[in-house]
Image (tube, rainbow, N blue to C red; front, side, top):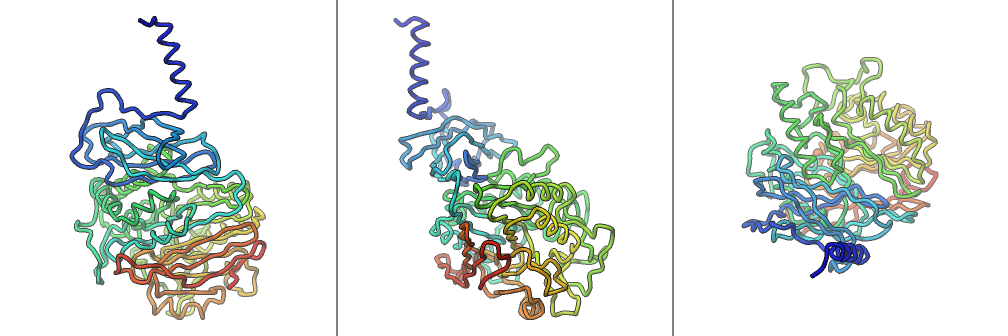
Length: 505
Ligand SMILES: [Fe+2]
């Protein structure tokens, strides 16, 4: 019989051996729960890649109490070399969502992960840490995926393209139908209003096999636009809900459900109900990706006349108030100024939601969309001044929202075409939705000399190959949104050369 000292010695030796060999996941004692349905039906996801870690996500469905979920992280697909294992809480109050933040891993390494609950095992996901000195970065820029308007086949192309990360800049879910048909499938539920409604909408999205596969294969960096809550809302102001208190409740439910379903750091959800989405990710000295949130803190457009719908173009934008409105809010603007100045990189990518460059429209000599950055001209100037003041080597603004592809030279002063180009803008089309208003967008390039290319006929996404000397971009178009096996084709390639802002076509 072994004495206590011997037992402790053996336990220590075993722990040391497990540490050296990695660790072995053991189901917690007493965890004999059998589940009739797969608790991991919503899949797995990773996000927030860093040089020494990442966030792993799952959301267990069907829970009736808080549960501990087991996890394993391995350096091989067969889980022979497990480098991390343990348990993470899946709280009922979070809908069973797990946001597991891991650090202390090796840079530039691929890892595989899975979760356990009772006898159930999740699908295997994979994610890589960022290399210490990356020479190349491959990103997919995507936005606007309407469940009813098309299949999400663009994600297959992203997986096949071996992208390092997906930048999803908003309209990840849609809260409403648009009814101008034909649709490929239906939400099968009324517009979400409560937390349960929004959870169900997000859960529905994760049953799409292409989206679920993309989350398992690629880390996502996400930020939202309006449809994650309600069309055309901004900050605490409703888009369509009549009762302001009802809107605040709706927004709180939507924010919470969004956090619960995204591979975000646990700290992104603040006690106030705010979701802190503005942040930066660094790929060594090659690229800094600054992700902005233009919805949560946005002020009213300087162009909107109180009480009027703002979803169409307006004839003239007369700036009101001293600062002419803000897309980011004061705190985020200050944060951006600091971060862009203190995170030098060969490429500074600014991922945000909507069209940044000026877009004069054919509906009148000063006609603009007040919901684009055109409705916040002073804020646009401040952001460009922050980029210039920081002596940013190459600024590239990445945008979505407008359901069409645009490649723009960003001018210091859009009213003077001869003024210097200070940045480049790349706008992705919708991944699955209808294109923009052709009567307005079709003639727009001729009215805006800084617009170098526009396509308003395709859905798709943008593939970016980032190297020190240049960015090679490809606009990837989906051949047919109604075909669940549609392929992507290359619509247009472009280049941005180091030290030469603007699009080289
Ligand atoms: Fe959209």
